[in-house]
Length: 116
Image (cartoon, rainbow, N blue to C red):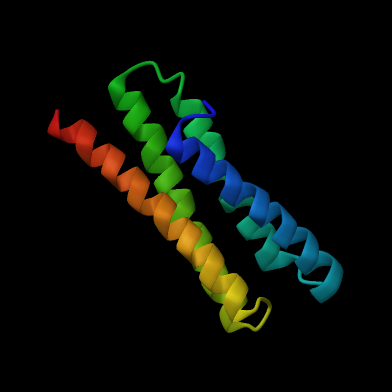
């Protein structure tokens, strides 16, 4: 799985979210939104990992669509954290870029499958 682009992207994003969660809890005492972001941000990669052993092409696409929903939710929590001044503009921009790349990659994979 290590050479799978979307797997690597989603795992890297999850690791960044884990670090941000720790920082927000320790430094900002922010527990609610950060926990929601932690759940959705790490769930993206978990669903990608599950998709590797999908039972069918439809199951594979379904797992990717779940990962896409989690990525969209992560984007929402990032927006709230930024707009509530819990994270800096630099943190927001960097993480938003990562999640947008993940979303675009998942959409491209799903579209390629549908074209076959």
